[in-house]
Length: 327
Ligand code: PEP
Ligand code: MG
Image (tube, rainbow, N blue to C red; front, side, top):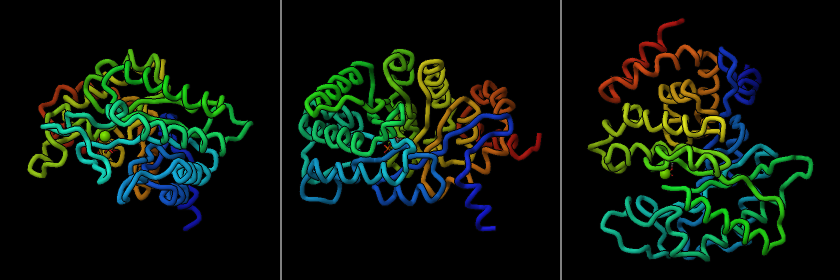
C-alpha cells in the first residue's frame, strides 16, 4: 500500500480529460529540494534563493552559492529547477544590506529593482548560477534543467536588461549554454502587459501572493485583511486570465504563489490553462490525486460565471459546490 502511494506521488498528473500538469515544489535550499524530490515533485518551480542569504553576517560567496545551486540541481536528477534571483525588500530583509529608504517598502526598490543599487550582489549570484548550471548539465539534454526567474518585474525593459547581464556574465566565464530566463507575474502591470513580456520571456510563473496584494491594494502581512486578500477575488482572476491570454502560444505559465497549494484555487488555475503548479512539498501527492479526478474543460466552461461574481467568498462558494457535485 505504501508502495502504491509512493508510485501515485511520483507519477505524472494527467486530468480526466487528458491534460498533463507539471506539479513542482517550492523550496528554500538544496536539502529541501532533496525532500521535494522524495515527495514526488516533477521539478522545483520556485527556489527562493534569498533563504541562502538570510541569517548570516554577509552574503554567501560565489563558491558557496554555486555548491548550493549545484546540489539542488543534482537532487532533482535532471528535472527542471527554477531558481528565483534574490528577492529582497518589503517583507524580506537582510541584516547586512541597507536598502534605500522608502515610505512604503512594498512599493519601493525591491526584487529585481535592487539590481541597479547592488550590481555586484546580483552579478555574483548570476555567475554562481551559470557555473552550477554548466557543472550539472548533461550534454544529451537539449535544455538545461536550470532555469532562472526574475521577481517583481513590471515591464519588459527589466527583462531585457537582465538578459544583457546574463549574456555578459556568461561570456566572461566562457559559458555558452544559457539557462532559460523567465519572469514572475506578480505586479498587475506585468499581467496586463503579458503579451509584450511573453515575446521575450522563456516562461512565466504567477506569484499569486504579491499579485493579490497589489491587485487588491491589501498588504499581505496585515492579519485583519487576510480574509479579504483572496486570490479568488474576480479582480485577481481577471489578471490571471490576462496573463494566460498574453502568454498563449508564446510561453508556458506556472503558478508558484500559495494559490498553487490551495485546493480550490489550484484546480481552477489548471482549468483556466496554467501548465505548472508549484507548492510546498507536503501538498504534492494530494494535489496530483485531485488533478487526476478533475475535468478541466467542464470547469473552464464556467470561468465566465466566476468572473462575474461579487467577491472571493462568492467564487469559493461556487467552486466548492461544483467540485463537490460529480459530473
Ligand atoms: C508570490 O509573490 O506569490 C511568490 C511566490 O513570491 P513570495 O511569496 O516569495 O513573495
Ligand atoms: Mg512575491
